[in-house]
Amino acid sequence: MSEEAAREDKTPRTARGARTRRALLSAAGQEFGEKGFHEGSISGITRRAGCALGSFYTYFDSKDDIFRALVNDMSGQVRDYVSPRIAQARDGIDAERVGLLSFLEFARTHKEIYRIIDEAEFVDQAAYRAHYENTASRMAARLTKAAEKGDVRPDVEEVHAWAIMGMNVFLGLRYGVWDDSRPAEDIAAIANALVEKGIGRQS
Image (tube, rainbow, N blue to C red; front, side, top):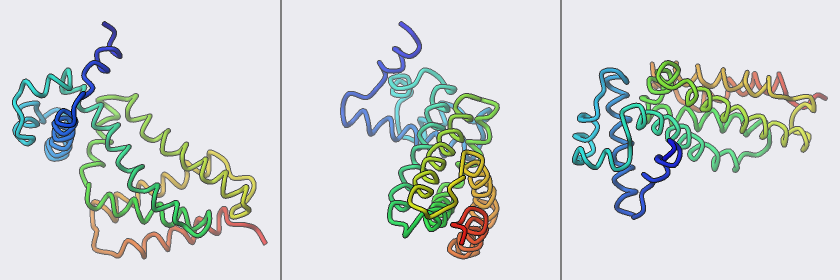
């Protein structure tokens, strides 16, 4: 059986199985977020999840396997939290403000995401790269639609998406993880003024 087929074979087939897998992923987020990948353990994950060791191997092959799944899962959580909020934005420029605001909110309640994603660079380079490439791709598509509507400059491209994403990543680290005392709305407004001056519709 190929690695891909084996992974598919571990997909939960019942609601109970889906809940168990979710509990394991949540526990892995806590374990790796607190201890890091190398110090974290499968036994620590199962203990946090309240699962038997055998349950772990029903859904994951190894510590590496659940870490890879966790990176993908956390990337999806960010997307699922941010995207519906962006859909309510007034226009293309406001969408970037809402996007950063939503990300700051997410980071403040999931501070472990930075340690996990950063470690992925050394534990699973493919998952690490996919996290940022997928995020930038969604942002680039959003900017393209904004350009088509006339909300932003017509020459926006991938470079703009990566630049805005890079800004958001470090603002999330500074004002989401290191110190979350300043209102997220203030941070998003200040950053959005830069975005508007940079790619806003030219008069």
